[in-house]
Amino acid sequence: MSSNIELCPRTDLQELTDAGVHLLNPDSGCTMEGIAPWFDRALRTFHAEVGHAEYPCHFGRRALKQQELFVTHAEAMSCRPLADALSVFLDYVRPTPHRRQVLAAFVNIPGTVTHQGHGEDFWNILQYLHDADDLPWPPEFPQDPNDPG
Image: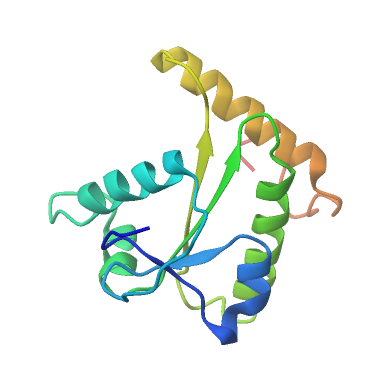
């Protein structure tokens, strides 16, 4: 890959890297062979948009600028790697709850999709992640989304 959008593996983050979670480091000079073309395009677009001062997500913009933005990706038809990446990332950030850590997840959804279709895909993926989660629901949080709890 010859671009300025790089995924830079760090030896201190090997467990994350093994799970498909990488630091997005636009200025590193690192390369990652074999990156899917759709993911490369998504990273370029993401970097261009999040890098703008007008971008509404302060934490994403800050994480990108400080080279602390983590990214992962999956195919829509196989979200198990996404579930695994989220689990490993949560284990990584759990010891530092005072730090705001940012993970951007990209899912390749083939074909032209409408806004409504993207919404449906999002909720389907979220349901898959919920179903794949083997931890019990925390008792301090209501399970009913309509519960103001």
